Length: 475
Image 1 (spheres, rainbow, N blue to C red):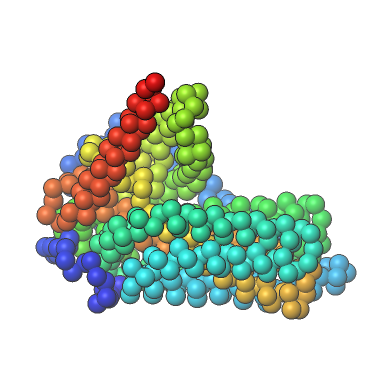
Image 2 (cartoon, rainbow, N blue to C red; image 1 turned 90 degrees about the vertical axis):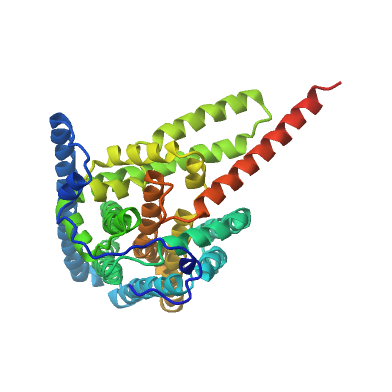
């Protein structure tokens, strides 16, 4: 992927020097041995292989069974469409068009991030609420009570995004810097890997849409179950696709950050698909669950405050739980999965312990906005996709408008998420490489300055809290 001239922060830091084309080992195991990491015990290896093969088998079984289900539903739907007042020519074109639009929007988002990361960061945080609110208004215009209720949820979600954007405004400058540094010189052929991932997402989503349409044509309770199974399969498959891309690109990027060498992203993807799919499937299952648990705990902590002793002790207990949960699975573990061929849980634990070994780095990781940026970008793509399908259905067949709009949003969201996996991969590799050698000449003072700033803010808050307590205790 070519480096744009307008990337502002990259030119001031020699992160990639010296860059050499030394040959790298063809497999992650060989690379692990080159780095001198001792092999795991026999029992750990057998257990790890067992779970990796199990989840790898689950992935391919799910893909096979889902494909068969979609084919059967599609054929049945086309045969029975006329008898159940289903209009394929009105139902399929808007949704298939929205799937194509999600691919185009994802590629467009790539260009924005590549050529002007600073504006892309700021645009994401104001564009996503606007687009989400537009979807909510569209659903309200459909007219029914159910549509209005779902539309109100979208509007509330948009308001929440706006408030969040205001809250994180002071952290945007640091986010801009870290994105520019980590994505300044992507691995060779990153563009091809990202484009292939988007194409696979669009084609696979379009294929599943035909099965959803076949189930919609008869609308029985069993068909609702079929649709749910297809959507769950779509979600997990997209997670695996996203994380496979993340493992491949973070592996190549880590090699550059840690050793100053270049690695081809396409070669890294080949190694990932050949050796690491089992670990990626495990991570794709654990990370969303752990993120949900940890996010809920942090929300409870924010709401509890520290004014009440019981609430404070409860919040402290939840914080301890969150700190333990994150070591079992986090997205930074994918870097060690790709680089050292570790199991996902082991990789997550090792990377987080590395973060904790560097004073103040864990707080920087917790305040990192790259995941929020990718999430809101995916929401934006999903909103564009749902607006395309929703407006079309509103004009030609209002009865299908709600379901088609929601399907389009889900598909667009996952496509956008896959499209920006490379960005998260670069940021993750940057942090992991820094945690292993903070004094390397390949890194500038961006992270140390952020650590110092967070420590100053923490000290200021502690002083204010101490003064408040002293004033409360004084007669």
